Image (cartoon, rainbow, N blue to C red; front, side, top):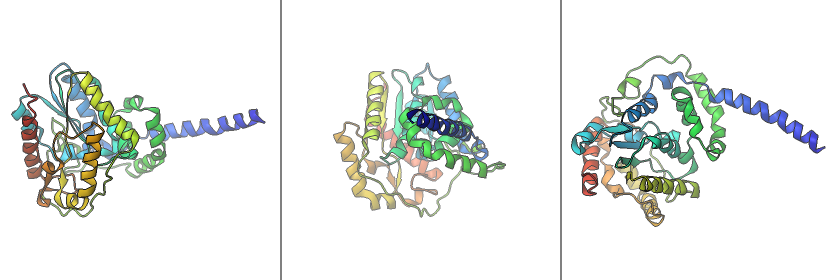
Length: 303
C-alpha cells in the first residue's frame, strides 16, 4: 500500500514539476520592450564597476522613477548604479542579484517600498516575468523558501506572458528607451491625479525582519556602507497611513534595522507625483534626490 502511494505521488509530482518548469521559463514580450530591461542593464553596469568604489541604489520602482542618479554622482563624486526596477521581484532578489559585486567602501542606498510581508520579501508574478525574460540564471539565487512562497504565481506569470505575446514597441516612461545609463527613468513626466493609494502594516513578519537584519549584517561584515532610507511617498497617502508608518519605523528601530532618516524627509506634495504614490514627476525626482544627497552628507560617510 505504501509503495503504491509512493508511486502515485511520484507520478503526480514529476509532471507538475516539468509543467511548472516550462511555464516559469516563458518569456514576456512586454517586459522585453519595457523599463524592466534595467534588471539586466544594471547587472552589466555594476559588473563593469565591481573593482571600483561606487554607489549602488537598491529599491523598487520608487528608485527608478523618483531618483536622478546624475545629481548623486555629481554631488558625491562616485559612479552610481541604480538597480531599481520593480518591487514585485521582492527585496530578497533585489539584494541577492547584485550583492556579489559589492566591495569594501561601496555605499548602498537601500530604499524599498513600505511593505513588510512575504510577498514583498520573496516577490510575485513579476519575479518570474523579469527573471525568465532578462536573466534566467538568476533563478539559482532563489532560496527554497522563496520557491515555496512564489510557486503560486507561476500560473499567473504564464497567463500574463501569453496575454503579452506580440507586444509592440512603445514610447513613454515605462518603455525600455526611457532607461538611462544609470538605470533611472529618464523621460519627462508631468503630474497626474494619483487615485490608488496604499495601505501599510505597522510591522514586518519574522522572515522579512530576519532578511533585513541579514542585509545589515552582510554589509557591516564586508565593510559596505548601508544607507537604509525610507522611500518617497505622496503626502496624501502618508497622512492616511501615518500611524502605520510611525509604528513600522518604531518596529524597525527596536529590531536594529533602523532608517537612516525620518520618513517625513521623503514625503512630498501630491503635485510632485506622476501616477502612483511612489512614482514622481521629473521635477519631483530631482527634488527628492537633492534631499537624499543632503541627508547622506549629514551622515559624514563620504571621505
